[in-house]
Length: 408
Ligand SMILES: Cc1ncc(COP(=O)(O)O)c(C=O)c1O
Image 1 (cartoon, rainbow, N blue to C red):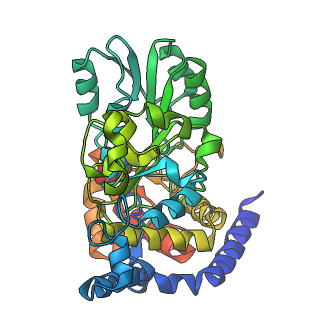
Image 2 (image 1 turned 60 degrees about the horizontal axis):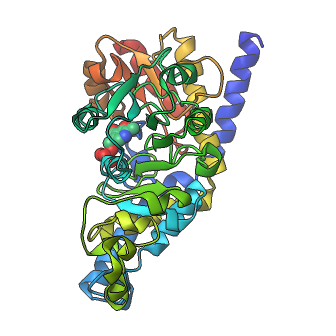
């Protein structure tokens, strides 16, 4: 395709996307005054989440039946109260069974809970992505302290290469723990291939999917992972203090919680059945990894956020994210920027684009003063990280690129 034809294509895309998104953008008040392309960091609150929180506060203020049914101890329900709705919504989002979901307060607590509950034996080894700012090596140090060998797999061409995992893995590997989408450069790793490899060696896979879920149509069964954790304040567009841990059904009986409270097992009525030993007393679902009360307001918000994405349809959301990502890459390429994001092939695309910039932290601050939100700095490979969602418009990308041309 020559340059003229390509430009015509981009213009046609611009017109159709703008019309498509008109009513959707009313749900995102930020769009009225600012250009927000920082969803890989934290999302602004959409109206439907705000309304769900306000309704919840109203219900709580009046102790309505709707509130009481949601609240453990305030209500009659077992476990976390009636939070099963949010598990069902999340399970639909990622294609699993709600019984495979535990509520957690954030991604890293979900990930740590999973690693600890696997009770990996001394002498085994674990494969981890090499430490970066979002994943410092505290966990690696803990595992080494337990006599478990840690083998770091380094990113090559900005991505985890399956053959590098293959070189490190053996039949003594207990766990392979990686990100689905790399937080900084936005490369999507081939988790399905890595899971297959791990399973051939009898190892489990644990995936941090925070930079994927809500942007991409993630199917955990297709990825064939054993354990996965995410938060909700990025692409799902929920609030901080809420997350989900997925445990593959067949693995649930193996999971031995190490953090305890009333929520790990059956509630009062069936409590006596636990007499035969604490293990029998644990929930037979992933809820066994929940120790105590969770943020009901947070999960009310998370449910509203997820239900909105489900109503739009994750296939449409993913298409919207990847199309605006491609449009952004096209405009940045026209302007001769250099990328930290690998651009070869389609299989590693995500909602994140990272452009090299020596003065990245400064650029971010300058743009913020103009109402444009992106991330950047040393922790982003000396680049600026741009992360638009499905509701962003091509015109916003054009403005952003014009600003970047002046500042980088
Ligand atoms: C991939 C990834 N995982 C985890 C986190 C941190 O999540 P949390 O605060 O929910 O533990 C981040 C935050 O930026 C992230 O990018």
